[in-house]
Length: 84
Image (cartoon, rainbow, N blue to C red; front, side):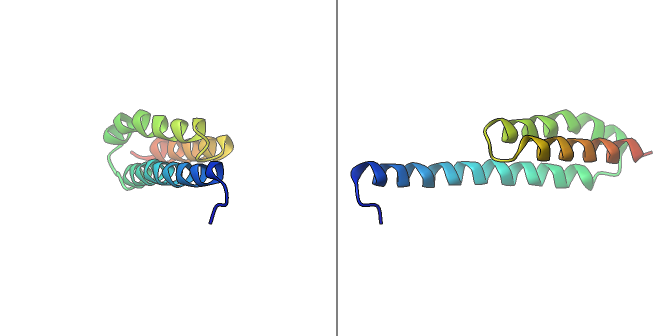
Protein backbone atom coordinates (compact mmCIF):
# COMPACT_ATOMS: atom_id res chain seq x y z
CA UNK A 1 0.00 0.00 0.00
CA UNK A 2 1.13 3.54 -0.70
CA UNK A 3 2.68 5.35 2.26
CA UNK A 4 2.15 8.99 1.36
CA UNK A 5 -0.82 11.01 0.14
CA UNK A 6 0.88 11.70 -3.18
CA UNK A 7 1.64 8.00 -3.63
CA UNK A 8 -1.99 7.12 -2.85
CA UNK A 9 -3.17 9.65 -5.42
CA UNK A 10 -0.71 8.30 -7.98
CA UNK A 11 -1.96 4.79 -7.30
CA UNK A 12 -5.57 5.85 -7.93
CA UNK A 13 -4.56 7.63 -11.15
CA UNK A 14 -2.56 4.62 -12.34
CA UNK A 15 -5.58 2.37 -11.89
CA UNK A 16 -7.83 4.76 -13.83
CA UNK A 17 -5.27 5.08 -16.62
CA UNK A 18 -4.77 1.31 -16.74
CA UNK A 19 -8.50 0.71 -17.19
CA UNK A 20 -8.74 3.49 -19.79
CA UNK A 21 -5.81 2.09 -21.78
CA UNK A 22 -7.16 -1.44 -21.50
CA UNK A 23 -10.53 -0.36 -22.92
CA UNK A 24 -9.00 1.38 -25.94
CA UNK A 25 -6.53 -1.44 -26.61
CA UNK A 26 -9.27 -4.09 -26.46
CA UNK A 27 -11.54 -2.04 -28.73
CA UNK A 28 -8.76 -1.66 -31.29
CA UNK A 29 -7.88 -5.37 -31.10
CA UNK A 30 -11.52 -6.26 -31.77
CA UNK A 31 -11.61 -3.89 -34.75
CA UNK A 32 -8.39 -5.41 -36.13
CA UNK A 33 -9.79 -8.91 -35.70
CA UNK A 34 -13.03 -7.96 -37.46
CA UNK A 35 -11.09 -6.40 -40.34
CA UNK A 36 -8.90 -9.50 -40.69
CA UNK A 37 -12.01 -11.72 -40.73
CA UNK A 38 -13.56 -9.71 -43.54
CA UNK A 39 -13.49 -11.45 -46.90
CA UNK A 40 -15.00 -8.60 -48.93
CA UNK A 41 -12.38 -6.18 -50.25
CA UNK A 42 -14.78 -3.23 -50.53
CA UNK A 43 -15.91 -3.54 -46.91
CA UNK A 44 -12.32 -3.94 -45.73
CA UNK A 45 -11.24 -0.81 -47.62
CA UNK A 46 -14.12 1.17 -46.12
CA UNK A 47 -13.30 0.09 -42.56
CA UNK A 48 -9.50 0.35 -42.84
CA UNK A 49 -9.20 4.13 -42.17
CA UNK A 50 -11.20 3.78 -38.93
CA UNK A 51 -9.00 0.93 -37.75
CA UNK A 52 -5.83 2.81 -38.76
CA UNK A 53 -7.04 5.80 -36.74
CA UNK A 54 -7.57 3.58 -33.68
CA UNK A 55 -4.07 2.15 -34.03
CA UNK A 56 -2.57 5.63 -34.45
CA UNK A 57 -4.36 6.84 -31.33
CA UNK A 58 -3.01 3.92 -29.30
CA UNK A 59 0.50 4.80 -30.42
CA UNK A 60 -0.03 8.50 -29.76
CA UNK A 61 -1.18 8.01 -26.18
CA UNK A 62 1.54 5.44 -25.53
CA UNK A 63 -0.50 2.28 -25.15
CA UNK A 64 1.48 0.60 -27.94
CA UNK A 65 4.83 1.46 -29.46
CA UNK A 66 4.92 3.46 -32.70
CA UNK A 67 6.76 0.63 -34.49
CA UNK A 68 4.10 -1.88 -33.44
CA UNK A 69 1.44 0.46 -34.80
CA UNK A 70 3.30 0.69 -38.10
CA UNK A 71 3.65 -3.10 -38.27
CA UNK A 72 -0.06 -3.62 -37.56
CA UNK A 73 -1.09 -1.11 -40.22
CA UNK A 74 1.32 -2.61 -42.73
CA UNK A 75 0.01 -6.12 -42.09
CA UNK A 76 -3.57 -4.98 -42.51
CA UNK A 77 -2.71 -3.22 -45.77
CA UNK A 78 -1.07 -6.39 -47.09
CA UNK A 79 -4.13 -8.42 -46.11
CA UNK A 80 -6.53 -5.97 -47.77
CA UNK A 81 -4.46 -5.88 -50.97
CA UNK A 82 -4.52 -9.68 -51.19
CA UNK A 83 -8.32 -9.77 -51.06
CA UNK A 84 -10.02 -10.20 -54.39
